[in-house]
Amino acid sequence: MGVIYILLTVSVIIGVAFFIVFLMAVKSGQYDDSYTPSVRMLFEDEIVKEQTKPSTDTKTD
Image 1 (cartoon, helix red, strand yellow):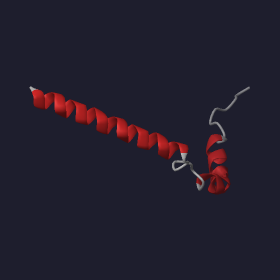
Image 2: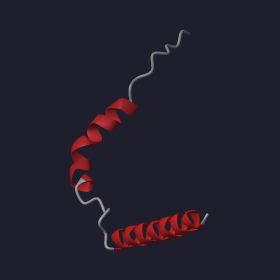
Image 3: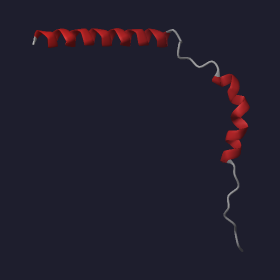
């Protein structure tokens, strides 16, 4: 039964350590995306064309 307590304690310590390292990485800007904004203007036309397709509904008066 003592082994379970040791394993539980070690796993919680490792989990907290990984969480702290993750928070440090986020604060340092490691996950900031600096590539997409510079390329986004090249692909905006395709997005606009897909959204503004003419409708197939026709009016009959």
